[in-house]
Image 1: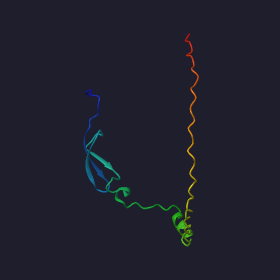
Image 2: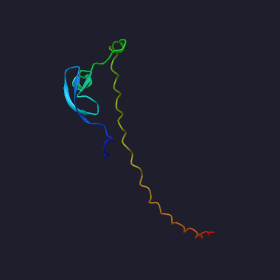
Image 3: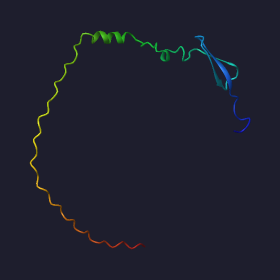
Image 4: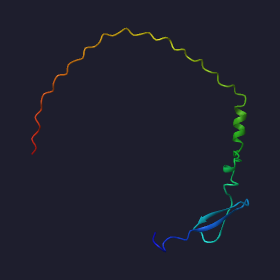
Length: 108
C-alpha cells in the first residue's frame, strides 16, 4: 500500500437509539457513531415484523374469500394399459455410397 493516500481506519463504537452498543471500525472521524436502528432492534432481524395493511386491503381480501369453498380435487386419470406393438422386422441397414472425391481448390 502506498503511504499517505488511504483514509484513517480506526475503531469506533456504534450507539443505537434502542441502547445497544457494539464496536466496529470506520473511516468516520470521531469515536462514536450514532444510528437510529440496528440489527438488534430492527423488526426484520428480530422476527417481529408486522404486515402493513394499507387501507384495509388484507381485511377486505380475507372477508371476500372467507366463505369460498375449497376447490374440488380433480380425479386422477388412470392410465390405460399400453398395447404392445407388434415386433417390427429388423430394418436392413443401407449401405452408404462413397462420396465423389473432390479435388482441393487451388489457392491463388
